[in-house]
Length: 528
Image (cartoon, rainbow, N blue to C red; front, side):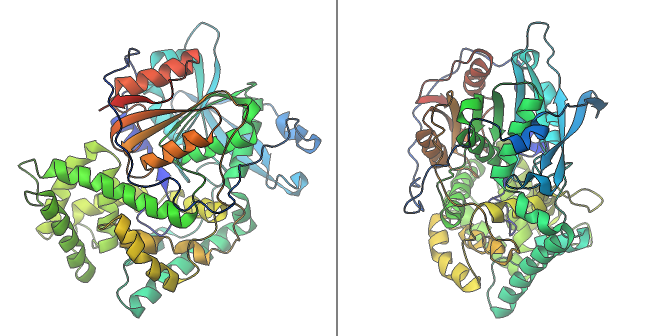
């Protein structure tokens, strides 16, 4: 989840993926295993009464879509050794003649001389993460066997990156948006937060118009099926991380008979409504903070005291200080409480960022906020020239379309704060107020909480990390249980997602499945 108003931003950025990627040369023999700790958050919390499975689409492709499924991809060299192509999909699948969208895909052709297994689609999450950029960042680090057997493919989902991107605020207004106070203490601060959310929504409506009603996950999953056909594959082979698991699970629910080898790493639980999902995610970041704090106080350079309790108290004190007095940085911008929170949350995504966070917190306690601001900017993918990608714009557009808003206004958000703080003493208040944004979205939601059964599909591997900050382990347990052919692979460790992040047991299990179709046995656990 992001530390901005968009609800549930779940993605593994290309930069984080490259920094943490160790996919080549993974041991196929696995590693030590250990029982995974039980999760403290119930996957049933927030399940709506009468939640039903996502209904599959007819097995036969409708005649009205035949032209889209019959396109030819014209691959052209692009981006330092990759190939790119564009293809058309209908703006509205219910009315295919009402207009088209252009989507961009990139691929790294299989390197092997033996017959290839097909294409392996990758998605890093988001919603709003560019699969094209992710592919280009991580492809060369993949296991040599996977690289030899598959064309690796990334397609930017509709509304994202190079695929008819949603557009909203300019750079200056995004700077203001990321800095606005998201823990309002009085009516003036509440009004300022509401005004910022309304400004964001109005800018999206003005610049993106009716397209905002057609960026749902269901539509993106249908787009993937068009691409599957254009790639010449009878089955979709797919590896999705974070929100990419929701996209992949949606595909499986809609097209269970077309599922090939599918890996869902850092799983979302589609059965949760917005309120329960955001609250559970707050608990996930609290779990990750506890792991960081325990590690920090064991080190000589920890700026937060000598016990975990002191670490939490000092973090709270820093946030309180920043709420009243933002810190100077090495730019004209000051570090606000909301940006500091974002910076801390960013570092929860990966252990290799923990030393950077320790140094940033030490600098902030000393009165200088540049390092924490850089972490916050990294979270938003703000470039050195001050520009932003469309990550946040697409995130808000997809999230607000996929599920009804958790709150209708600030009073409901305020009333929810105690429950969020119970789940996350350090981040709960922020995350309750973050969830307010969709209340002002100009397009009504088209989705609702649901389960995904995908009856009749091939085995689907669901990977869950026990101390994942953004996608709590209970979500992976729930999704694996919902899926008729779900296989849960547990990583007892820290950070967001597990495959390709230094664990030979996880990487070996996933690679064996991708290459030979041998899904890990249900209950397989890998130790840190």
